[in-house]
Length: 256
Image (cartoon, rainbow, N blue to C red; front, side, top):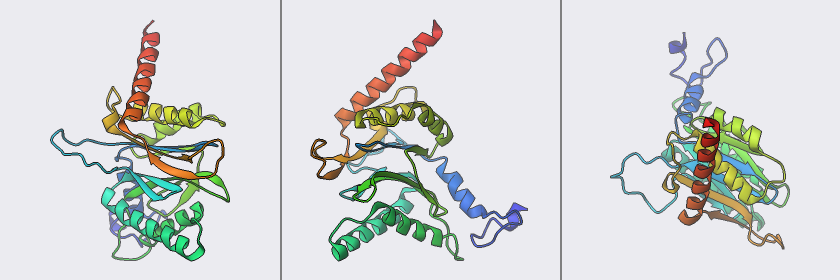
C-alpha cells in the first residue's frame, strides 16, 4: 500500500501519513548524533564528527557546528549540503532583522522562520523535504538562554536537553536521567560528552571525532554580552579523557 503514496510529498496515505517526510526523518536517524544541553549560564551543543577514511583531508572549518549570529549557534544532523542552504538563509534573515531594527533577532522568531521554509518543501509538488534536523542554541533579551530542536516536517520545540541523529532514543534516556536543573556550563559539557560516549560506536571517545560549541556570557559576573564559541582541541581532549576514564571506572566496578 505504501508504494502508491511514497513518491509524493503532497499526497496523504489512507492512514494519514506523508511517507517522504517520514523517510527524511529516517535518514536523520542514521546520521551522526548531536546533543544539546541548556543551563542558566549558557547552552552547549555537541556532535559526532564521522571520519569516513583516514585518507580524507579534514578541513579547518566546523562540519557540524555553525554560527548563525553572535548570540546563536546550531548543530546539524543529516545531509550537510541541505543544511548549508538553510543555514545561509537563517544568517540572511538574522542580518536583515539586525539592519531593520538595530537589535539581534529574537531566537524563536528566527527558528520559526526557518521551519516555515522547511515546511514549504513538504507541501508543494516537485520538491523533497530537507534531510536535516537542527539543534538551535542561543540567547535573547526576552527569554534568556534557549534550546530548540527542528525536524524535516517543519515542527520545532523547546527543550532543556535533547539529542538527534543516530541512537537518539538512547541519548535522550541518558539525558532524562542525568540532566539536573541548575547545572553549570562545565557540567553541561561533561554531560554532552558522556552522552556522545555512550551513543557512538567506538569504544574510546577521541577529540578528533567530536565537535562542541557553547553560547554563554563573555563575563559571567557582569552578564553583559553573549558570545558563540567553538571549543578547541585541547578542551575537547580533556573532556573526552574524563568521559573515557569514567566509563572505564564504571566497567571495572561492574566486573567486581
